[in-house]
Amino acid sequence: MKYMTLESLKKALQRIVSSAAFHRGYQLADLNTADMTGHDENGHAIPVMNLGLEIMAQIEALYPGTFTALELEFGAPLALISHDLGRSRQRVRINGKLVDRHEVDGAQMINEMMIAEDIPARYRSLVTYPVVNHRANGVLKRNALDMPNRVVNEELLAHLIMCRRILAILVLADKCIGDAGRVRWNKAIQLLVLRFLGISRHWFERFANEDQRNNFANFAIRHTEVVIDQGDSSSSTDKGSLVLSIQIDERVCSMTQILSVEWFRDAFHCCGKAAQALGFSFRIRTTSVNRGNNYEELWFWSKEVRGWSKRVPIAVPRH
Image (cartoon, helix red, strand yellow):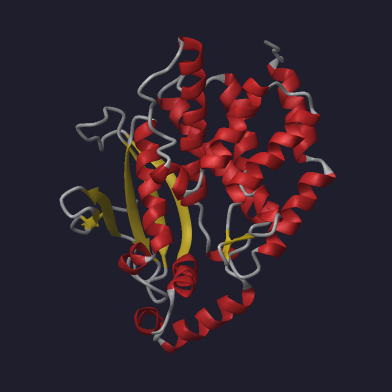
């Protein structure tokens, strides 16, 4: 079995992400998603990478040794920054319908780039496994974050655990990143007009289809960050909670409306599974640009209602 040193892997990573093919891939990805939020390298891929590495750093600070150097310095950075590279390829038509399979295309593309760098398969899978499974279908349908019922040997198990941890970080970073700035300018202008007229939330309920509601939700999210609350634990974890703090503009739409959008509902469900895979619970804490600074809402997944429930708003002292 061929091995590479961590330094050699890091140099190969830098050559890949600085290559013309990589940059061109994200240019095409952004062009191919002109009907969606932006998917360029600087506006999405790099922020997702930075958020993922920040989450890992927070976890390492509190629980040293959670991640290996191989995950921190090679697998996670490359998976995070390359996760949407497959959007550079056109959607395929299956049974008369255009199908988005960017996770499969992206895994193939980054795998080819790593093969060109002569990176062995055991290292490539640390990147391709998270990329091919980072969408809701990988997490919720293929159960890619779940542990297998049977593993052949301890080495394979250890490798799978690393792949699973990187996937968990990619899911959290990709689903928790703030998206207001990625809404296309023409759609943003429409939303600003509706907001100015005070009818944005009404329009969301009465006239917007699912794709349009997704833009409303994205545009309402003004700022996000992920923090660890060790004091908030459940019976399933002793590490605490990964808390997604979201600042929203409620004149665009409410948090309840955001959670009614299928993409966000599935995304936050995926985040719950990702947090659990890392030994945490997942919570959403919202603040509003339209209310006082001491207003917060805490949302948690309720098994009883099989959906997101809101705790009573609390006043938070500000010093």
